[in-house]
Image (tube, rainbow, N blue to C red; front, top):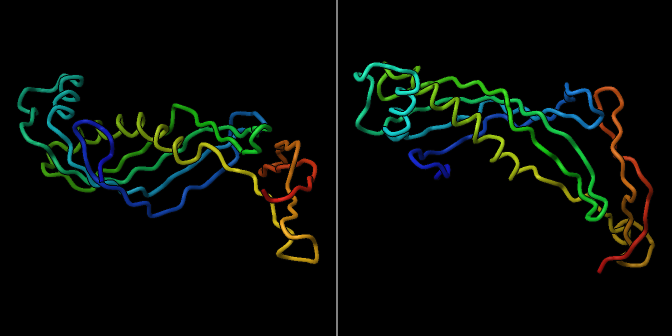
Length: 185
């Protein structure tokens, strides 16, 4: 599959699920999203590698003429904050734009270029991961439950939360609010 970046194509495999941890930012709604063991296999165009070589003021001998294949693992921790949109009753996740990123190159076509390729990949992942993650975790609809399936109430009777607030108690975030009754459309 394509990664949506000019000069690079490849595929990813997530070996571990993402984890949500209490944030270190000091705010009640701060969290951190962690991803580990994300395996990526890519083909990197020579223009990206040569641009990194030029930035690092490396010798002309390190310039490449053809795409280089590389496989690597990336792990990241991205700061974020939680909020609730009362108009849509959604839990909103706002991701930070400066993740901690670690890249471990496993294989490359040319082992002599491994450090250069690692630098290219670390820069790309630092810039790309917040964008990709924000598309994946932008918000979650808070559920309403159909009580008609669990008891003797009129069909379509629902219960859900209203006036939702986020409270932090130690390492946990709680969604609190009032209970509202409604009906299915």
